[in-house]
Image (cartoon, rainbow, N blue to C red; front, side, top):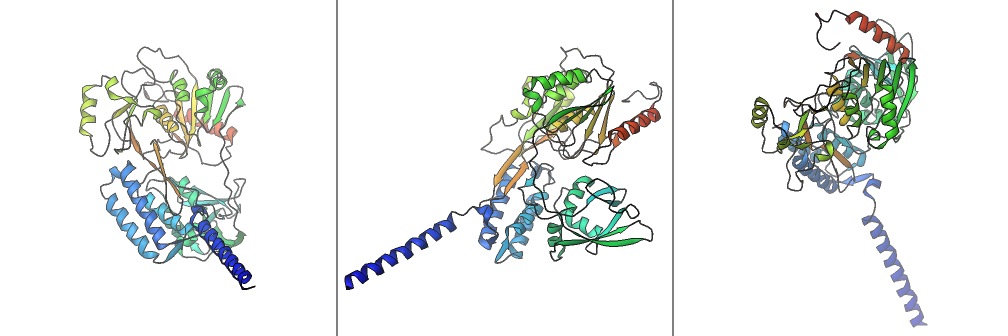
Length: 473
């Protein structure tokens, strides 16, 4: 009997030990993305990794001699602010502010702004903001402007949002961030709530407040898309968000060639990105001028782990392949920086051996801050093309090669630009967007008939004899 009791006790002891081991293993192997609270030690580990990665790989860090000190100061402030623990959301917000110090339009911090959002779309108008519904109509036709959120002036919300953005962020990018109510409430110091109070005004003497529930956040995956639409018998519209589709889709390229026979070709590039230059090269055949010189330049942040061909996938070639003009060669030599690689060249859009195709087609490109990578190069090149107009809003200047890393404790993914782009004269392009010829509000729904009517009016007003206006029509 005593022996039997001993076996039972031993069995229970081993069971308790096994359960404890399993619990410990579950804790140690837990997915960091499932953690809702992090300790101070985990905070320090993530910030240390962040600092090392930004200083080692960020090309934009080389543009600001004070960045290293700014980053160290901000890191010390954050570590002091959370002496015991913090939520994963708080950490992601702090990291986003530190990354924003780079003023890098290609930077991002995981998928962390997914909490409930403002139940209105804000659209800039002069120095004020319109409050629109999901149909892009004012929440109140008689009081179309919004002046306060939760009783706090909108200017205070703008200040809270700007710390997460590059200093040259567009009003459209600011509007997107202003919709993240949960994030900005934390930044301002307001309590969280399921509803939000909006103050609407006519900017004169009338205003009213409305209480609305926050809108659940939707994380929709953007699928590659290119589709055609006939706006009128003589106007073709192409909407695309993935320039890489033109690289391997022969039918899409054939459709583009047919569309180039129309009197007017409109291409919606507001959300286009990709590494393929196939669309740009096809358009350049009837718009660009042949040249023996590179169409642009680039260089990357030096690091022992990076090979010297890291920019080849981004359309760059060795500079030695080109006989540069003497003045340009001297300019590039004077721009040398020890932290950056030597310059690499982007080939000309049309070589001297190519004969431009004669075309009188009117080309309209609709662009915005989400026009990135090769879309940026297309917008930049098209700014000098004849019979071409850029519509929409200015781009952000996002040309850089991506470098991504994951923080060990929080599992947050951070992306930065590891290279810089320059125009054909050697002037910096990265962080400096291409300006549009005609401003068009950046909304999801475009009133194409109204846009074409406004375009015709613009062309009539700007129609002058070529001797008076020899430049781009």
